[in-house]
Length: 126
Image (cartoon, rainbow, N blue to C red; front, side):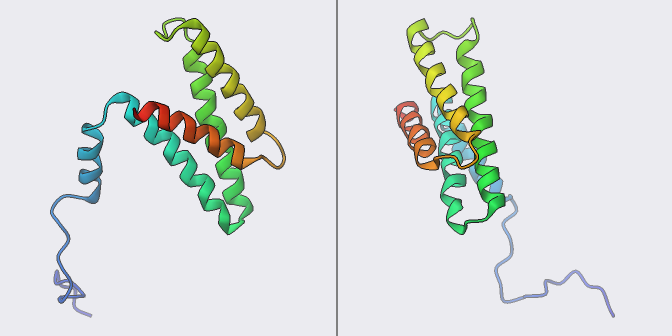
């Protein structure tokens, strides 16, 4: 067998010189930090939407990913250096704890988690 550098599918377009991630990086550079945070909540919701497959692994992954996201939110609002008003930080911490508790349930209510993600993504996107 002869090894060549020819493409096995010559009638197909040649891949661009930049990887697809270059487009994603350009998109991220145009976003504010709040919008980037909103994208994290949107990504967490995508993992919940993938639960339609019903796979136990997908359910476990969605629960763990969302618990990790909301644990990070909880830690961020507890940080004394956080510039948000104390009352708002306390409210966000309460929501974060509720979502974390839900994600730790044997059968999490992913509708509730998805709603909380959506509310926060919408607020951050503005």
